[in-house]
Amino acid sequence: MTAEKSRVALVTGGMGGLGEAICLKLAALGHIVVTTHSPGNAKTKEWLTGMRQQGHEFHAYPCDVTDYDSCVACVAAVVKEVGPVDVLVNNAGITRDMTFKKMDRINWDLVVKTNLDSCFNMTKQVADGMIDRGWGRIINISSVNGQKGAFGQTNYSAAKAGMHGFTKALALEVARKGVTVNTISPGYIGTKMVMAIPQEVLDSKIIPQIPMGRLGKPEEVAGLVAYLASEEAAFLTGANIAINGGQHMF
Ligand code: CAA
Picture 1 (cartoon, rainbow, N blue to C red):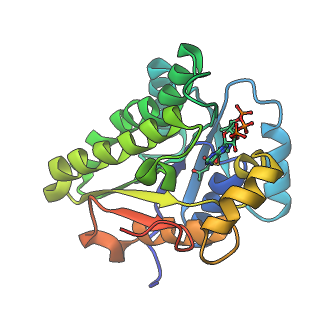
Picture 2: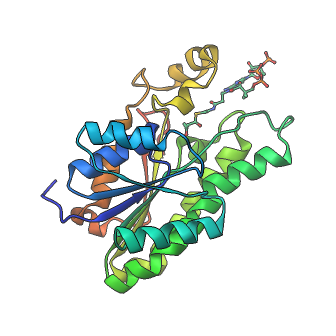
Picture 3: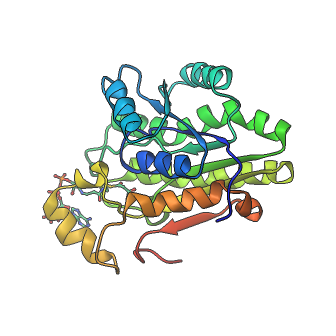
């Protein structure tokens, strides 16, 4: 990749797992990186200090991505204190896995609000500015399970599939404005979210389905995010890029 102009990149849920790897990669390319954390997350200060000790000066803002007003306040503060957002990575996400028989309204709503409504709530705050400036990158982190469905994930699969519908429609609307919108669909990556799957399920049902025979690495997904955020990726929009070790091809 060629040297990048420094941009302001906002990564939701960047304090751990995939989000942290994305923050590190974008920072390594010279971008100014802002992340969001759940309001009241006691680990924020410690995380920022740890990152500073490793030479990374990240910005972190409280934001409940399920709550529209919280997103309004968060992005307004980022714009005022750091600058207009050029790259938005909608990464924050949760699972609440259970079979449909056990799925209740609370766990349906929680997952759909966190994984899907969040894309509207955050993108709404940055899209007009990107259009006005004639440059922007919106990257939605979905999942292989939004593409193929997953046992125990009616809520998550629905939300993750919905993200790509959002990507495609918005990509059409902003294609002539210098703004690209893309989805990345990672497979099973070695993060806390995946390690929370019972080991027996991981060993017997998941790893055997991955032709590469291993979990992905957060850095492998972060490299793809960095490409989509780059100047070079200007002609790539409305895509859903799978990165899953060969688990699902279509
Ligand atoms: N495929 C087929 N059958 C499955 C299955 C699967 N993947 N997982 C479980 N089953 C079967 C079990 O074998 C069992 O069958 P029997 O009753 O015939 O023995 C039955 O379903 C019930 O299984 P459990 O005892 O495990 O049921 P449970 O209610 O305790 O838990 C579950 C169900 C929550 C779905 C649990 O199996 C589980 O956590 N599965 C993993 C779900 C998963 O893969 N989540 C992905 C998280 S990571 C992620 O989402 C990141 C990403 O984007 C990729």
